Image 1 (spheres, rainbow, N blue to C red):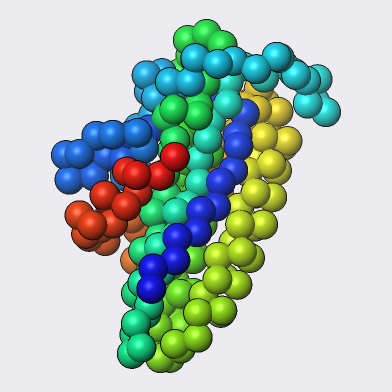
Image 2 (cartoon, helix red, strand yellow):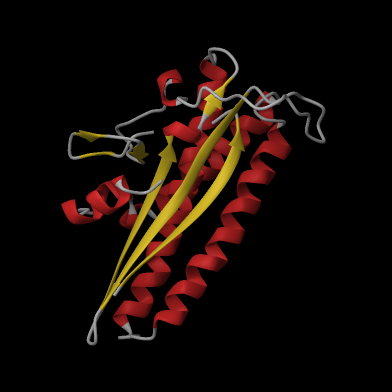
Length: 202
């Protein structure tokens, strides 16, 4: 049995799966790939809204974690994949370097929570837990944590307009990424069948 769960966060400002030289709708996080203006592909721009900090939205980034759980009678295998959905991400105009850097940190936050999720899921696997429910509960728990973290990032930096706070967040997330470096997306091998499954998502 294969169960696919997706954690999605919509981030102000915000690819094709890009792994093993494959490029399609989604971009999988990699330390070797940085977001570009061309990663904002959605032509349907919604009516401009203002958040509580009174700035109009300049773009929307759709980023999230896809988790694929493969279960048999004797084992469970889990793949955790942080992505950007290019087709659901949009921008009003060309984003400057500050805007792109702000969005890249959104993607890095997604990667951080993917690493945290991998660590906790590994503990379940190492303990030979075959019940699917604890795995699904972990995914649901991370969904809420990720959404809250993405919101707080935008709120405290006012979507990147407060440079000092933007710098503080960059330092904080980099430190945590280093703490969970063992569980980096770059360190895992995603089978082609999983890539194919992901490509078929709408």
